[in-house]
Amino acid sequence: MWWFRNIPAALLIGAALFFLAGCGYQPLYGKPANHAGVPDILSTVYVSNIPDRSGQLLRNRLMTMLTPRGIVDKPNYRLDVTISESVGKYAKRTDETATRAVLRLTASFRLYRNGKEAVVFSGASTGNVGYDIVDAEYGAIAAEKDALKSAIELVAADIRTRLAAYLVNPEKPEIKANP
Image (tube, rainbow, N blue to C red; front, top):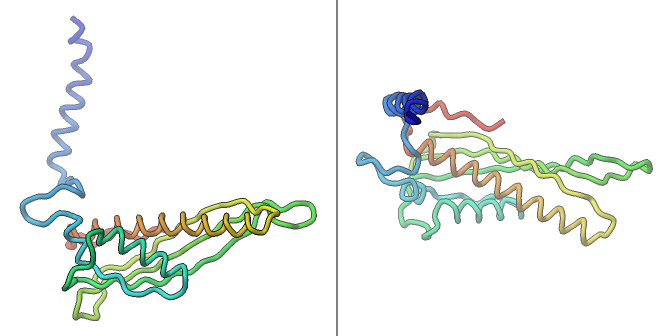
């Protein structure tokens, strides 16, 4: 009678699957008959130039994530991004020199349909990455560059996910900005 003890768990799982099927849940990377797959949709987004070195790195990462097979001839959307960086220093020694820092990279983005100047989707994404400040100058520079690379990765992944969620179902504008 071992199966009798598992009936409540089986019923609970079955009920959860039944209700989940009716709630409108749809996997992001599924390919229903009514639209193209997420990679195909994302490949129609052109990323505009972003000023400064950090902007160049973010643009390159976004282009790699959105259009891994290269830029399409006629993109449907244009993505404009502006970024800001700040470094907060913490964990001070008795001589007031910092031993820890947090790099904060904030990217505000606006998505336009090509040929139109009305924003169809916008938001902001933030990446916070902590790193150690070491006494060796090269080590400190390398740690800051690595933190920037990690922050760019976080921001680019968040923007990509949010664009994918919007472009798959643009009728649902309830996608909120990342605080």
